[in-house]
Image 1 (spheres, rainbow, N blue to C red):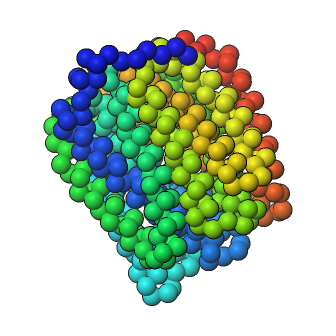
Image 2 (image 1 turned 90 degrees about the horizontal axis):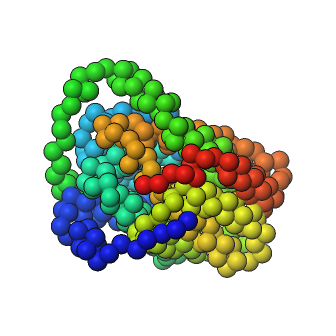
Image 3 (image 1 turned 180 degrees about the horizontal axis):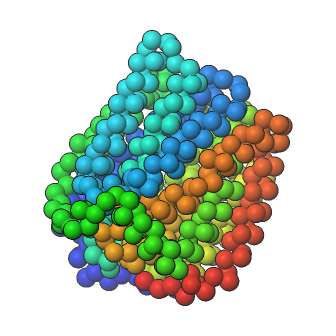
Length: 412
């Protein structure tokens, strides 16, 4: 888990002001991610307000996860074949349009739980195209030596969102109601979509684009299957996310509202704490270079399981917020090295496909995780019990990875 601090000379080479394209990508991310989180908090609280049936709340996450999973492979293929900047523009602009539709439902007082579930599904499709495009574009703007720092800075921009987003969302719900929160989200996503258009990147036309889409997918699958590092990461993420995603995403809002009897500002407090933890984690990894990223990542996985377990025993709002803050710090210690490993070891013309494959496999069981969590709640299993059991399983699965020599020995 050793690290080394970059020299001032290295930092000077990485001045964002000297990399116009990366700077615009960063600015776009600073509008896009917080805007998405403003919408997400408003949507979650609106669903909890519209219906006391928590199955509907679970369906909100399930509806977003399924189309995201279905279209991710196509999103990766598009990222390798089309202009990545254009894909990011369409993604943010389409989200703004969807929020505009929700505002119309609110103004006409016709919004229902079904409307929110359908919008969640459409947001999931947008996610499927934006994720591989963003992560395939970053390595095209930066040299390999700066990828960890670049990924960390993009993550920092993204992690401002769980701080700024819930803070704005909770405050706007209290002051201006749901129309206020969704209007701000719409404006931020529009700004993000416009900013990304300033990126000027001449992507090389490759002969691979003349090959059929099926042939390109086959090529990507064969490459992934033969790469032991990719296989190790994908198998690990496949099982861990099942026990983590559903209980965390559904569990925190339910605990805040049903157990702690909190308000929208209470939920915002917990999500802001998560954002602070993730932001600090990204900042730390932007300041240092990991000498043994594989060992660091596996240690982080074990810590995630332990803190997730502790989350289930929280008895106050502030205890819950503190625990999830430490947990999201640790998540960055896992996610950023994984992303950097794949970006450094994958040919650039396959980056979109590899990123979509990783996301597809790692989220393959997430819809089932959401459905299972909603079902357990429906039959009367306490949310905190679900989180405690899930934390135990995540910790156990992480400990098994200590036998994974391929990950333990990896170096940038």
